[in-house]
Image (tube, one colour):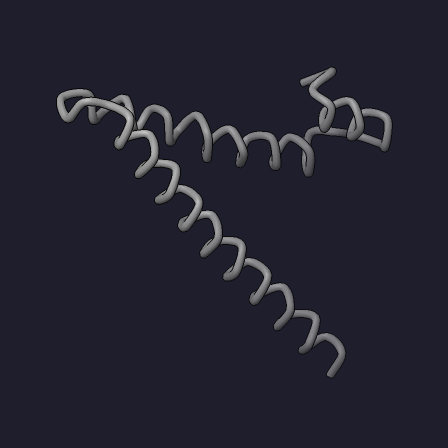
Length: 81
């Protein structure tokens, strides 16, 4: 039964994380496109790739690229990639 609740918690975590990512991305895109002229709409999507895409890249680097606490701290502080 403990394994069931652990699996349920993992699913809920990823669902909530995905929903928050989608919400943050939509708000970022709205903000960026509101500050640009209508003919520069593609710049808004490039900004979205930089903000949300950069956040996902840092998360993946932190989770899978860093080995040990020293590298995780360096990656988190931006001292190392």
